[in-house]
Figure (cartoon, rainbow, N blue to C red):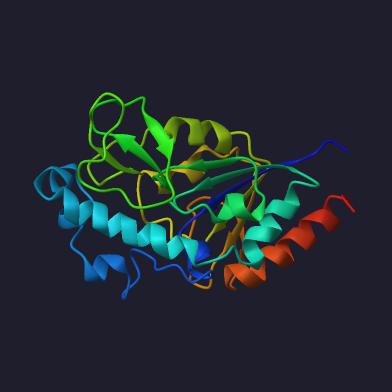
Length: 232
């Protein structure tokens, strides 16, 4: 039997199960910080230290958490399926669990880029400070898509979703656009799974909704898919 192509759209709920603070929860990061102060191009220009410190704190926190059972279950799917992960998360927990094909829509905490040279993107482990420059002299900034900036990998993500035999939506309410619009690119006969305790609707699609947290539902679904498609 030919391998099926599984595409996962993952959001903050996936990382929350590892202990990372989410952005949009009622007690999340946007409840404690004004978006306009820490996550816009204007904020970076107005108060670069505040913006850099905000993401430095996120990067330090990331070092103290580990992938959860759900992340490892996603990676295990690669033994039996072609798997692509399209994530709204900026952490590297999918990669650390072993997933090989991960596309980050909103950037990556573990990378920096230059305000001067759009082609300069580099790995980073520590903090970014005011005065840290790229080789061409541009200030380094987090490799994060700020509010008001284009999502450069959106078209690539749409092409990935358009090839899905099975689409798994996990840890996201599908309320944030343009990422939420990606489900519309899935073929008509794509099998949809939603992994989230909250009620989520995908208009015009028949979905299988597993109303459990990611750490429970993803390992369970991995076993279901392996058995269903005779991948044992």
